[in-house]
Image (tube, rainbow, N blue to C red):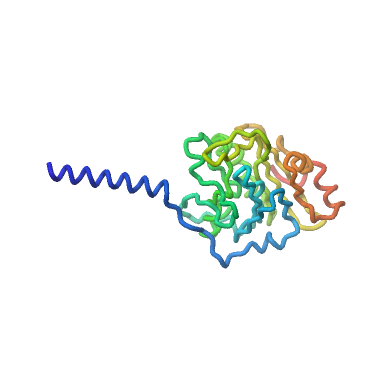
Length: 265
C-alpha cells in the first residue's frame, strides 16, 4: 500500500510539473544578438508601417500591430539555398522580445478553434536553426482556420518555393487584412482576419515582376490564379504602401494590373 501511495504521489507531481512547464515556461529568446536582416533592412522594397512598430530579425522584417496583436506584414527574402530539407525540432511559440509592447502570448489561441498560422513559413527556414526558430515568435503568426492553413494557404507557400527553385531569389510580403469589427480570441483580443494576402516580387530592377494574392480565410479548391489581384487593391484594404520607395512609373506599371504571364502555375 505504501508503494502505491508513493507511486500515486510521483505521478501527480509529474502531471503538475508538466502542466506548469507547458503553461508558464518559455525560453527568453530565439535570436542570436549578432544577427541582422541586411537583405531587408537595407532594401528599398520594404512596405510602409501604419503602426511605426518595425521589427528586424536576422532573417525577416515585420511591422507589428498592437491593436490587432499580430503583424500587419512580414517581409523576407527567399533564396534557392534556403530551400533545404534539414530536420529541425519544432520549438515552442514564444513572445517576440523585440516588439516594444510584447507580442501576443500563444495561449490566446488555445481552445479558440484557430491555428497559429505562420506568415513566414517555418518550411522556408530549415537551412538554419536560428532562422527556423525565429518563425515561432508570435509576431509571425495570425489566427487561421485549420482547413485554410493546411489547404490553399499551404498550397500557395509550396508554389512560392517552386518559383524560387525555378526563377531564383524572391521577396515575399504577407499578412492578414487587419480591419475593424473582426472576431477576437484570447485574453489579449487577438483579431481573426477574414482575408490574407501574399505579394511576391521577382527581380529587383526595371524588369521586376509581381504577383499579389488576396484570399478569403477559408479553404478553397479554386486555382491560385483566381485569387490574383492588383497590388493597388490590397493597398486600399490595408492602408499599406508596399513599394513606396520605388519610382512612380515603376509602381504604376506593376501595381495597377495583374500579369501572370511570366509565372508557371
